[in-house]
Image (cartoon, rainbow, N blue to C red; front, side, top):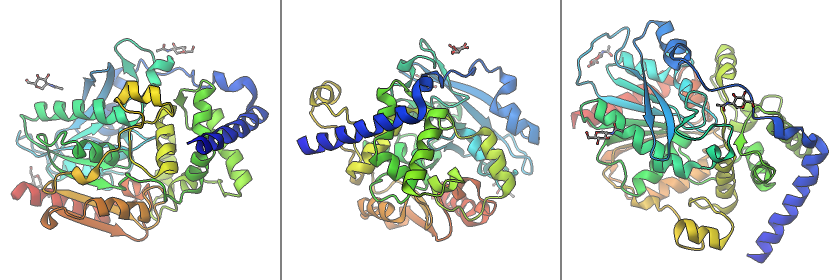
Length: 412
Ligand SMILES: *[C@@H]1O[C@H](CO)[C@@H](O)[C@H](O)[C@H]1NC(C)=O
Ligand SMILES: *[C@@H]1O[C@H](CO)[C@@H](O)[C@H](O)[C@H]1NC(C)=O
Ligand SMILES: *[C@@H]1O[C@H](CO)[C@@H](O)[C@H](O)[C@H]1NC(C)=O
């Protein structure tokens, strides 16, 4: 423990000097852009769904810890227009540094949300706390550092159950199909491992599953974790992680320069080489994404990358951990507790540098006793992290299979 702390401290000191050398004091001013207070005319429905001719409803959900989240519903398709009530509900949960827009960026015949609506599903799109369309809170402003005091533990504990319960209620208490990408898989896996949500979820499609991170190959993410970059940001008062803010950009560029990583294209150096994104998709993507998250959330990921565990956030202080968890070390999540009969569809790619093949193997090992007829594994050699949500051929390679899986579950 002592050795580990010494290592941490020396890294922190290094990063500290390096940070001041390159950025100076300006960094404190970054996260204060004018945002929030969006009218419904500026919501996701108006922007990306109704403009394409689809029916769309804006909903909001308030979590038990006060966050006000926006949720969009596409109750019917365009090519398959019916308003019957008994359609199977599907909830789409995006990944970290993204929001619900992710599922709607491509043309309708390539975007999962529209494809599902056109195939007869009742589609719900979630937006996690801290993203552009979910910045509200009962008492806090997103300008307050207290607003950003959370990691994916809270997304699992508060956001996800509230959203799932809401969709379940709205769809006449039908169990729903869940689709998660990246962080959207992590919060579902950890919730299921504690027997949560199971009375409301009938199956889960997990795209680029994140559970273990210690073998990830993304040079950018790996170096940031090893150098305690996010910890340093937090300690210097940057509680909101603004991916395109000056502080983050400068630090990343510096890592790239020092480590000789080619970062001319940040999306690629972060996610891996995506095979099938069109140029126009990438440019639309960059108009909307990436989104902010809590710096504390990024620290939690760094801990997972360094420690190889999947556990609650570590305060690195036995007393603080005791106060939060009743024990000196943060409790680990045990994914072998996921019920073997929960229908699971897991899709991952050979070029994904975040949900990398070796870490996914470790996850699959945790699921090795899963009922074979409830388990569908789909590997695509050429796909990287963003292909699963943005590739122009994802319908053929992933979504058609995912929908077949949902239909099979509905029929059984
Ligand atoms: C956040 O801070 C900015 C800049 O100080 C201010 O313009 C904005 O109104 C604040 N927003 C909220 C919701 O407090
Ligand atoms: C249209 O929706 C219905 C359910 O409402 C579904 O059974 C059917 O397969 C869908 N048709 C197409 C072409 O996707
Ligand atoms: C769902 O419905 C139950 C029972 O009517 C109600 O108590 C609960 O507040 C509702 N929750 C949400 C998130 O809509």
